[in-house]
Amino acid sequence: MFFNSVDEVVFRDRESFDLFKKSKNKSLLPDFVFNLNKEKYNIKNKNYVLFSIINPSKNKANYKAFIKRSIKDYSKKNIKVVLMSFCEGQGDLSYIYEIYNELDDDIKNDVIIKSHHNIEESVQLIANASSIVATRYHAMILAWIFEKPCFVISYHKKIRDAISTYNPSQKFVSLDEVCSITKIEFGTPTQMDEWIEKSAKYFDKIDKIMI
Image (cartoon, rainbow, N blue to C red; front, side, top):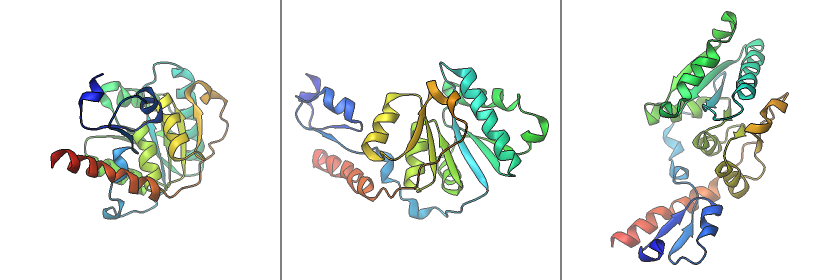
């Protein structure tokens, strides 16, 4: 097996780790993003909720209806909504504009569209949000790192695996069931100190290989 021929193999999810139980020199570590130094960011809770949006391959209508309804609810409360595209190549930004163009004109004034081009700017947007509605995997991870109230829409088993491994109390709904949500229930911010400490072991692995 290929993995037995290399010095180190690191998996970030339990399912992949378990698939190769017989492999040597393997380990399970939290996502590398947990190494982020959040202290360098000027964290302010501003009056906006950040939605990380995907262009789903299924349940498009239900997902869109949920996002539009949520934007309308926040607009009534005079709360801005940031619609964030983390992956233009997979159609996130085009889908955001599809949603935006179907909103009433008065609601559009409360919507800010952002696309990920600069890591620092994108991370700062998450750091300053009052809360996060995450569909993209790393939007969820960053919400945890900055201890933001977070609600997750799970479109892939890797997200559910991360929740069960790192933050079992996280509130989430599958993309298949998003139409059943009448009110967003945010998870209580949880300290990630344990996983931040463990993620630093990536550098131990690199040092071991390089020496």
